[in-house]
Length: 77
Length: 319
Image 1 (spheres, rainbow over the protein chains, first blue to last red):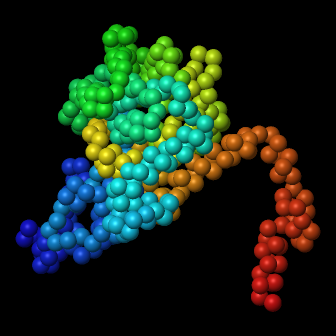
Image 2: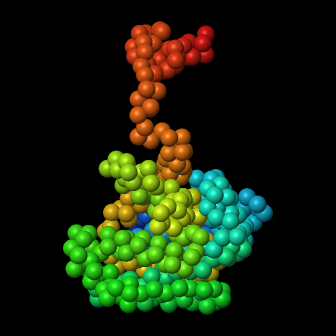
Image 3: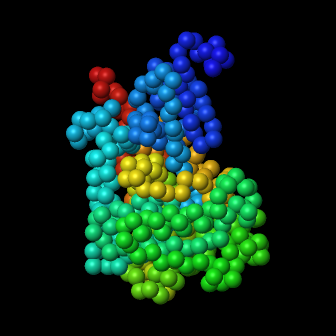
């Protein structure tokens, strides 16, 4: 957390969780900008906040966790 | 972002359609569109018996869910492939993939009181897919080629043995676009001419249909989540690094910059195929060149070449 604050200022970072990876971004930006900053292709995920799907224009709030669900499958159909 | 239908908070945004919908309207929209595609491509009617190939994945379970909601008579077929992490090349999953996908398929059938046929490849033929792959030396060390071959063979056999009118699979637009992309890269004309939403029945072959072929993979994930369908989220352990996934990722990069690219790629292909524009000698005749009436350079346009028409238009506009 201390390290995150030194990079991100006083605001609590937002966590984007995709499978076993976590990305920290600044609160206050849109989900779309956060994904772009994290090099996540928006087309390849569905974003959820507290289990509900959200669109990419959502503004990310202090300290929240956004779960990203990968959509690409190559096995099950 | 607001739902286009009710003005409430949108849950899904489909940039290629410039359409955002709330969860409730999205759950209505997907079946409505599926019905439209079933009719547009003459896939089947309500009098016909449908066998849905289910794998426990989001697409096939969503397809089964949609068909039942639309009032079609649809049973499921699950093929046990014998894939688990101990038989995979990259043990990243940590689950017994086939067992879990069968459990989820059976759960779905039980919850909705549906009939699920379960056929285990090893029980039928004595070998699981990974073992069959190792023995047959097909597929360069990966069982995907053998898996595809066995699935096509068994699905067709069972659909015919059990006298179903049609076999439906959960292929989505990303699946179709990835196959199209691969076949285009190699100009595999035979495969290109065979690809489409419907493969008509032929001697010994059941009719095969893909009712979800115009939905993005992202849309089917959203449908499964919104509907609360429990599906297998883990990748097939053999899928990691596959060519199909690479093509999908590549097309998604394109889609992110140019929304609608994947849809256009697939639909324009279907249109060209329907018109008979693909790999037909008459195209060469149609592309007959003659001199432009303005500059004399060769053109296929009836009078002036495209460049001269552009200049003429520019001159008229700026006069």
